Image (cartoon, rainbow over all chains, first blue to last red; front, side):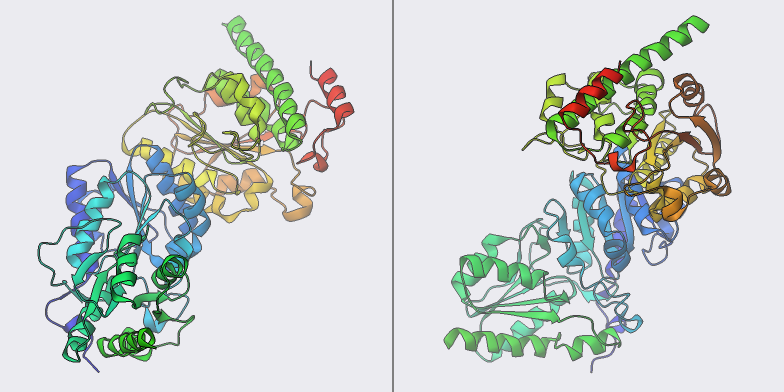
Amino acid sequence: MAAPAAKQEGYFDCRDAWAQTLESLAQQDPRIVAVVNDSVGSSKLGGFQKKFPERLINVGIAEQNMVGVGAGLANGGRIPFVSAASCFLTGRALEQVKADIAYANFNVKLVGQSSGVAYGELGPTHHSIEDFAWLRPLNNIAVVVPADAWETAEAVKWAAGHEGPVFIRLSRMPVPNLDVPDRQFQPGKAELVRQGRDVTLIACGTMVHLAAKAALSLEAEGIAARVLNMATINPLDDAAVAAAAGETGAIVTIEEANIRGGLGGAVAEYTAANLPVPVERMGFPGFVPTGSVEWLFEHFGLTAPGIARVARKAVGRKRA
Amino acid sequence: MLMLKNNIADTIREKALWMRRRAFTMVFDAQLGHPGGDFSAIDIVATLYFGVMRYDPTKPDLAERDRFIMSKGHATGALYTALCAAGYYPEDWLTTYMQPNSRLNGHPNRNYLPGVETNTGPLGHGMPVALGIAIAGQITSSDYRTFVLTGDGELQEGSNWEAAMTAGHRRLGNLTLIVDRNRLQQGMGTEETNGLDPLDEKFRAFGWDVEIVDGHDIQALLDVLAAAPGGRSRPLCIIANTVKGKGVSFMENKASWHHGVPNAEQFETAMKELV
């Protein structure tokens, strides 16, 4: 098994990009404030707190209050970034996210840290693999899942300027920057990481670079896999999914989340209703066993070879 | 000066009477609503809108406006009639209460109705949002005031106590909570269900100043609310002792009028009493 990603050269913890970007935005715009639940360190907001002590609101371990306070700050003309471990931000405060942020349509940015199974060994209470399914029906919340440090910075900049609720889902798992020329962050649009016509790998967040790696090995076997970075889960880029279904005839979705109700669920909903093609959903089936992130990824096949294996299966289903 | 104060109190009493009659008509027409809680809150809401708060109904988004949050969001009869009387929208909007596609939901939506500060309905949401508004005022050194009205049963929701703790800790002197202490929740008494007393001691322990008033004594409400922020360094909790269904003999202190609706005979009787 590979050494822990944290030690690999060229891999970046996206939280650094998030924190640096927020600090520089806050420097330019006095309306930007941060709201946390005793999560200054895990949100990497120590620098923000030093520079803008009045604009870092720490409500303590109280997530319902934290999200409501975010709505109130927006009412008072601030642009709040509410940052906390994703499992508590979305799970503990779900009704506040629904009623105070989404339904009330406040200009609040929710930032879920250490999402997915980043807290691997701490167990399912600390995993945030249900968050996509919980937030997707809240149709006016943009759900953005950056794939790397570059995209994290771009997503945070975009969110600050966008009028309306946003959920940005970050990991603490280091990832490499994607190798895509002339990148531009386009909310609501899939990013074409690699062109291909035999199957489409639709991934988000920490899974995108693994999907790109899988596509390389598939190429050696003569399978041309298209790779899409679906950085926005909500709203889904229907056109990109339609093109994937129509042009490649088979889809594999890969997410660090429960396969029910997340990216795979969204793609399956769309294709089943509009353009039925084989769809293989990769992710987690439910609560997962205890283990390190690396072990969990390996165990559930969320690796380049694992993705390639499922891609072959999807291509086989197409021919069947 | 004394005359002037009396005049304000008289004006508020007139508005409150109009609100009770109008709210009960809305509930009768819709055969839906929460009239018991409307009537316990109406004198408080009328005092805020017609004797205390600074606002301009033609500019509902004015940064410096005082804010009111109806945390007991089901008391739309009280809120919608107050906003109407305050000039946020014409009276004919009230006739659409709970009709298909109406702006007047069973619970308020700020995107549909000018003057509504946040969407409430699920209990325990108003306090944290009010806190955020007060913190924004503190950060920007604005002198607007934030008022939030909760039910008493509503205080059984833990989110209120998360907010109460933070408000005390941050010494939010620009925040005023009014508890509509009618002692009844949906099914029965608050003290039989999950007791709140001693409520004043609870808030004091959380770092708040506490005042206890008769929630139907307009002059008493005016005295305590008009002085509400006044350079305080602690948030203020006003425990307003009220009567659920206040103003209609057969409704007073009856839990069944939480979401009870009148038949034609009851409606007529109520209208005769509300004069």
